Image (cartoon, rainbow, N blue to C red):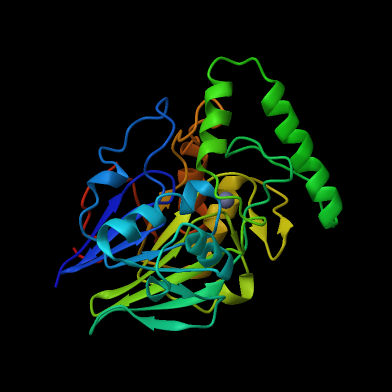
Length: 298
Ligand SMILES: [Zn+2]
């Protein structure tokens, strides 16, 4: 049996288990100013499943075309499924989940779904080694007011390329309600298990009872712990997830410069340092796009 993993930018991966092709998220066609990942959605010829972490465009956009091109089944939140229905993905290719389900993907591979949390996009975030404090206990209205003022700031910015980045975002969004509910997936194969999460947030009580062999984690934004922003750094957040899960190896995603100048690459050095302090036994795998990495081997 072979299990190989390709990173396709942001938190999108292609996981191939023998003949079974599973996309984790589907955002591949990005802002032309971002470094290219080496393939486009139109190149996807084979896919059996697309698992969707949440409904923001940098995760979901592309799933509808993969489903149309390949006949793949999309597994995602009820909100992701609602948006895929609007994109005319046939009902028999849609599976809505909320966490607590186990789905069979082949004779030997299955996936368990868990409720998760989205990073605190409404709160103050800094570089990966920068301590961020406060923003605790905000109501939904207060969080929304922060989001609205961030968006107004972006739209009025005269930084070169910002108008294009905003236009890309507007073109790709499928108008989800919020993030549509974030999910984590545990993919179980005969060679071991892989936990995949596509945004920096979690429920502590869920992660601490899982023991995946490998974990694909997101390293961007202000981490969300049980619904509130981490009081500390992104690096500490990632290391905390590694410590809760205790996998043999971790792969980080969402750290690339996927929609410049709105995004910038995450500085990995503070994360590496924090990981070696808090989770010294975990191997950090640094992947490039389309590496075909044997994630459960060696
Ligand atoms: Zn998101």
